[in-house]
Length: 489
Image 1 (cartoon, rainbow, N blue to C red):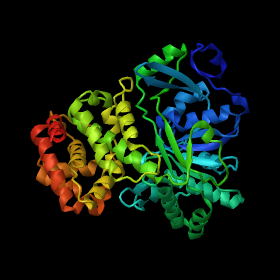
Image 2: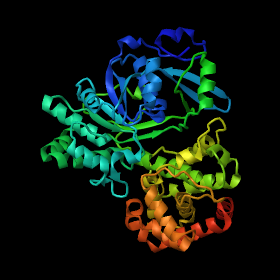
Image 3: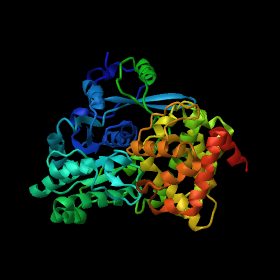
Image 4: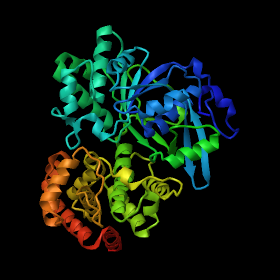
């Protein structure tokens, strides 16, 4: 029997379920990017808010392209399970905050209409870095991006997240309605400011007046979100369905830790996020950089080098003491580039990250984390490298992580097998790798010359020297030995 509203009373007593009457909940949020991360993080917070009586803040989810999530969740009334996995066991919770879902590619006009509804006061996003149609190195709109070109010529039938936001805001402006808040929950540097710049630049290409109105009236709070959410597997679905006694087509797996830091600046109100555990602050940037340069950077280092070494998951990789030391070393070297508010304990945060990475119940695949590296490297690794170079500090650890990415995107692993590289620039990287061959002195400069990833930093002699040397070690000794040499030095 399928999970659904009519059979919640069939759940075992230990399964937590919505603590409110869903029939009384109305929509106040549209979320773009209805993936596992949102359903394990922001939707859980909103579920807590609904349980506290804030019943006008239900979520309408939008998948920009694939219908898979909608097709899985609609038959079960958009209910789904969050399975929180720790070494001691798994806790299951049914989330009811998601009321409806839309597939943007199937019905763009319907999504614009939902977003333009004055009842919607927040439009949030988890579309990954590549979903913003921008150049990560500069943070500016990529005006040549195919979706941007399409949306400028099809204003009322957009494809991109920025295109939908602009179309809906233009509709609200015409109606004389308050604009919604745009709440990015992606790992972008200064994500609120970055998305504001992208959206206003995009809108100004359509109408300078619209761009100015958005810049003057729409709030774009910056946020920092933190929860590890692996890809759901068929065995995960089977385990969750067994625990429920009902079939859940698309549960999400996650860890006990969760954190959400939000700049408290909203155009048209918000639920009581603080009561649900959200940290409301004046300036998110220190927390955001902390996560990007400690958690995300070390995660990427483990993903690329761990994958090359033959490890399937982050937890598997952390069982190798040399890789555990690598993660700690990335964090230690990035920590000196951070300036945190008083009371922040970076040492405790780093210790918590190492514990989380080693969680044996969390099967977070190295291949999954390795996706879209061209969009992630500038925020996760290159910023810390730039700051360390400015302080005349060594960059060998971060350089090895960058070299691991280079070895990975070349498309062949250490045994000569093809790597399924998922990246917007994968074809460009593959062409450079074919031309350079497996020669560090040719491949490293070629990839460092990709301006969309490295910008001016790619021409820095100290970076070129360090990355070329690290890539040479990977080709000569392999990832396991290269990491061992680095952390034992």
